[in-house]
Length: 490
Ligand code: ADP
Ligand code: MG
Image 1 (spheres, protein in one colour):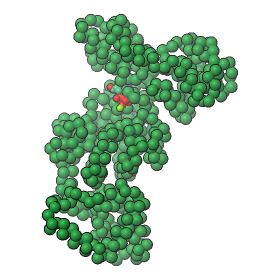
Image 2 (tube, helix red, strand yellow):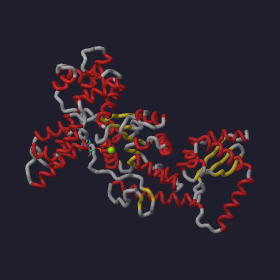
Image 3 (tube, rainbow, N blue to C red):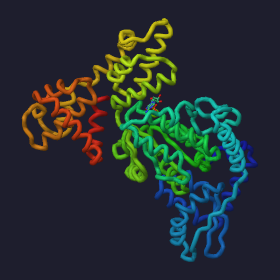
Image 4 (cartoon, rainbow, N blue to C red):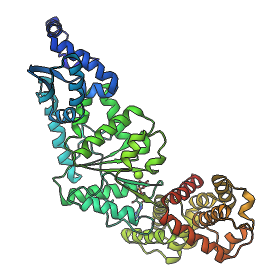
């Protein structure tokens, strides 16, 4: 695959010149060795890495025991030195035992100079976008002024730490995000935020970015959805400018990629993500990642990527509690500047348990409705306006479904959910089921107790407390419970 862009037009003169170069190359022993060595490396590292890092290399000259190779950019130079220089020297020694090392030099060629100019323009455009204004690009992130990608997706200025309501389910993720935003040196790398849909991952990521851009505008923060990352990368592959793609990340201080579950199973994107990731981590840049599951549960993710993701700090955002939902409603009502009866807020916090997005959407609808028809907000109007949302939340999970799912997860009989057996192997799953019934349905404690073989409400209370304790102490157990919850909610 030749770079199309390196042939300005199809005039025979230029073709001839290329031809001559080929002849000349084939005459130099160093170049013959290089083509064998690079072919060998290609089979070792795979096509994608070869195209990105090895193909652009040219052999400059040989100085005794040192082979000098050149690459078009400093970023590539650093990368090649760190990752391939030793292996190249080894391979070279197979041909010629005199060779002792590889020296990588940076020599921009005519074409890459043109490329780096447009890159500078793209970087300038990115700097302009730091304050959230002056955005010239459309949704696909292509800047019409120069046709180059501006890699940062737009940030929502409303997503800040100040209006993020903190409660038990999200306090850890919140604290970790704040630390990353405020730290002068990288506190943990990466920060991996995970949690179900609509629980505030994107909000926290934008809050980090908004904070950094306000306090230290000279730092280059790039926020990108994993899908955008993938789309950009695939386009770069198609246009054969993966070098450009990589160089875009060269000047990034903080890279945030949202919803990485979307790149699991996409191998070449994962590969690229892994390289970009490693390069930035090695240079001490901060990475923030979000996903809907913990790294270990991301299907189709490569093992080495999972272990890399697990290396930093993994922070889970749990499903909301009643208290947090109420706090969020109060904060949003304040922002909207509307009086909402306490009863209505309690009703919403009790009923709309799916996620914060639904809760917020519900509140907005109630407020909009009241304003439109000029009526007060009451419990009755709320029920009327939100009947579909309330039904969806109600219908979500039944205690029977919870019992079925939990017993099959722990491999016990469903009848043991009601039985009097006290062996830990059945008592623990039963407690988990009670806990989930409390969290996921709007049943009262006595009602839940009745469904578990007529147990007392204090037994249910005890189960909830026990499971909470275990979740704190035992992260495997916490993951199990979280997994069950997600399964039941989906
Ligand atoms: P996710 O990315 O996890 O799917 P989002 O960050 O998009 O969720 O959050 C969905 C909506 O809920 C956003 O409007 C966000 O502002 C709001 N939200 C989520 N959690 C909170 C919170 N703790 N406090 C205030 N708003 C929140
Ligand atoms: Mg999101």
